[in-house]
Length: 149
Image (cartoon, rainbow, N blue to C red; front, top):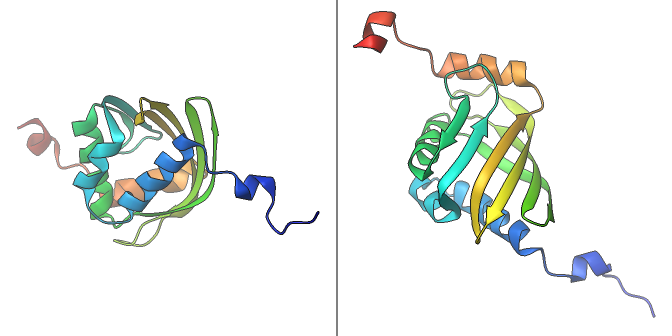
């Protein structure tokens, strides 16, 4: 018996992979507030690097504020690969900026899912130096007096 569909293609996606797919669909919709439904209240989202947006954001409010900044840069993401094992989803995607253009690299994320929500995400950049340089250009710090006011 022959089939044109492999067993992997016939099986429904792991529920956590489906959740991350839905997250990316919402992310592509340009409505930052729509992302809130995917986040646990105590979510931790870690952004690598040495730039103004790097560090660990704690709580849905901080994570949404981070995504609002990405929206200002016109960030887009195109999933390449998703796989799940237990509570973890590994994601590989193309991520690029449109305002201004200048950053277009591969990113990997490790998502930890708890009770149907993203509880943790750790982001890894394929070219951290390019990411750092881009974010410094897009989000320069103000002068010291203004920062300390």
